[in-house]
Image 1 (cartoon, helix red, strand yellow):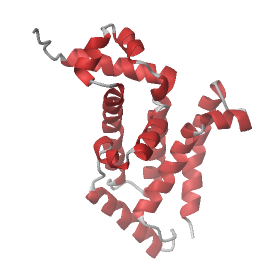
Image 2 (cartoon, rainbow, N blue to C red):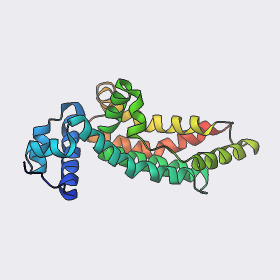
Image 3 (cartoon, rainbow, N blue to C red):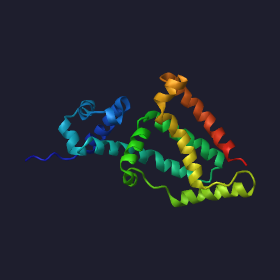
Image 4 (cartoon, rainbow, N blue to C red):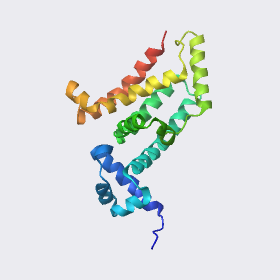
Length: 204
């Protein structure tokens, strides 16, 4: 029996093709045959490298998360003023999800089906980064510039407001007519408006 040697370039090409198909179809609507055609390989090679569509989707998600989350944690733990941190995190998350709008829905569905998979799909934030953010929030509260808030609540509130439009995009189109090109314009507006809203929410 002939064994095919693993080739990193082929694996990366399959991941890029899967990303492209997930963009068009969503994760649930994607088919392995279409991903194989997009990658220019046969379907058997997809199974050789990843086994199942779920394993391939996990690999795409982990690759994406590993590109975004460490940079966000770096911002969280930096010495930048809080206002700049908020603007940077909002900009990076929205830019990231613009290129991968299927990811929030995929993550939510996977975590509801199997909550323990969070440990496999998501890197853990640095304790030092969270501690640095908490110290910054506490200092603002002591000075009377901010209301007291735990770092976890602050981050969850902010990330939730960033992700929500991507999760309910069809609803936004039906209710507000924010679809197609209008959705992209809406994201540009939201990237500018959301940091102001978050900063105002922190004030006493």
